Image 1 (cartoon, rainbow, N blue to C red):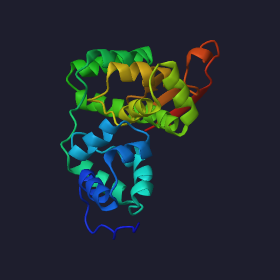
Image 2 (cartoon, rainbow, N blue to C red):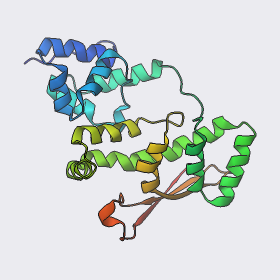
Image 3 (cartoon, one colour):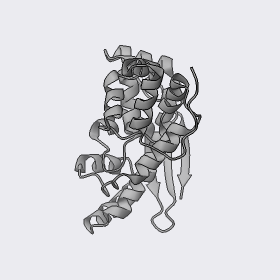
Image 4 (cartoon, rainbow, N blue to C red):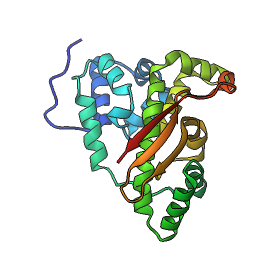
Length: 231
């Protein structure tokens, strides 16, 4: 099987994948199996119903590249260009419960001041802060993709499958302040973030992470902590 010539210009991820599947006489089902995700995910990606994930937040491009014998960085290049050309995200989630859950994890006095800022219609400023907090949480969750055994155990415990469990992780990794959901908070953010605060004068964000992802077997074990500061 020959590797195709390098791309001269970025194309959509869907176009690149469909072209290469046709050239290699592979199916979307085979591609889904190669990246350990449900076939519906690949079908939606090929149909343009799902935006391609950020390269730094996924492992699917490396797997797709190997399976389809693509150029090393072609998928990542196309994904970045496609996302950059897409519509901008809304400034902040309209889900008040999600914002309140984030505030519950925040240092009380800082949370009070942030609520006042939101009351003053400063959602853009708050959305930027939540994006930085989300970046930290997603960075911690990204490591779950490398823990196949742990994900398989979690899937079995919940009566799910490994591909579905991987998809849940990948969808959270692609979340933004306007798409963050209550299930995201319950499953990924709250188990990872012990607490956080921000210096509203300097913008330095301090996040205390739980080093372990709590599960039913570890509930009696105190979580070790890691502190991350970002400006």
